[in-house]
Length: 101
Image (cartoon, rainbow, N blue to C red):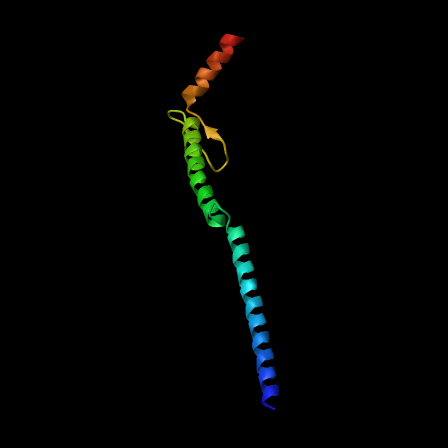
């Protein structure tokens, strides 16, 4: 009778060991996949930070372009996209057109 109990315990221990081994293998695979998704460059967080840093350059370029559209005495109307220009500029344009004709 004791031999039967020993066999039962041995099989149970072996089964538990196999389950533990499978669980460790699954966790190792999960860790490898996580590392692969993170990538060598730091993953999504690093890519996001790079995009945020790049947008600062875009914002500066946009500000520079807006300043280049502003003429002395004129203003940029962002609501309609139209540019209101000082009357002097309109006079100068008229003069240039008349000289060309």
